[in-house]
Image (tube, rainbow, N blue to C red):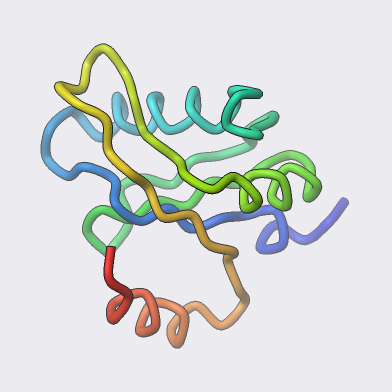
Length: 108
């Protein structure tokens, strides 16, 4: 099986403080399992993380990472949210500390 980091994407723009963390993790799981979002089987969602509004989604297959990254726009939509939220999906990399520094300067 492919290394976990290679099957993981970083999600930025997760609405913070609107819902319970476990509910938000469920909404993220559903979003990334949907075929309309180029998704697939989700192994794990890490939310919340130390960085506000950021989640990590690990898929069972690395191919799903590639297809999720190809989708132009990810909109987090759910009846429990008052509106949709655009998400920024990026590839996870092994060197997380420099990657988190990089994420911090990205415009959302």
